[in-house]
Length: 362
Ligand code: GTP
Image (cartoon, rainbow, N blue to C red; front, side, top):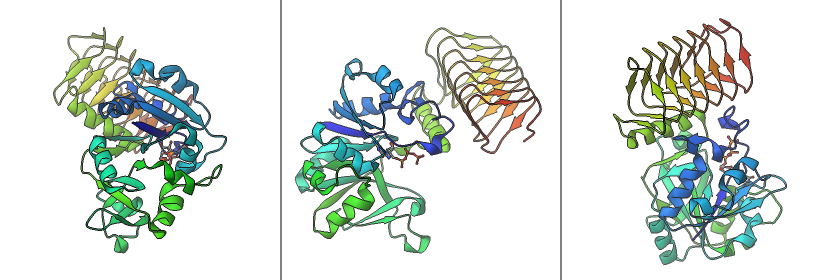
């Protein structure tokens, strides 16, 4: 089976992490996000993958190539301008046949794709959409269905008094190739706005596949952090500490799982790593430093007595002695935080910026 992965968006909400790194290459458990998605697709015998991107991102092509190292075949479909979710699939028309999957490239899920395909074939739908429940549907596109699961209506961001269901579009579709005749070529268009509603109006059958399996869209910093906390609790497990290669941890350092530590890290005396937390390869944690709930990419240096809590730190950042980077803060690559700063409440610092010692106090 084939899947088109949509990966040509701007990824603005995940900035500054995505200033230098495409969203599908952002590390999750120290591996590019796309590697997880590919592994998941393979478990459902989906080995032909079309990656719909804007311009070909070098990092993706050099890491994944034609996919053979990962046991799949990857073809790339590029766009001269952002064509939207439906426009991007139309643009990849020559690369698809038979009913195929379409995936938003930022979804991590356990939804049973094989079961979804079986149902799709039985129902003879032109399209099937996976649906997932959310607590607050007012910020999503909700999908109303009848008792047989046939889609009745799409409502974008309903106001609280208009909410009739908490089931939202999960960003996973199965499409019959015929649907492509309903999409205008070389034009920006979105499935849920420009393609599916007119198809419903003209009597086409679109069915839903509701699922309460794990589902998260990792397109914002808080959900990217939550995804990794969730995955760490599965692997290495609630108490687990996994070292991916040779690293040094001083005998007085405390490491409480779930924690994942990349190769060639060093963890100095009296420091504490409290999970869920991840150190990318080459990170150095100074004496008395405390890291809890944080995700660090590659080669970060954490100064003596510094404290990191529930924050995201991209590659090669330096956190000065006694500095704090707390709740929801996001640092891009190569950020230098001078000593004795206190960053909190989701402050974002763009790649390459330096903060003078003591310049930020909360
Ligand atoms: P934000 O800028 O933070 O909203 O992120 P985004 O650009 O990724 O947009 P959004 O999360 O709404 O997109 C959902 C998925 O569709 C992502 O995987 C995007 O990469 C992808 N996507 C969005 N627009 C396009 C497009 O024009 N072309 C292609 N190929 N993919 C797109």
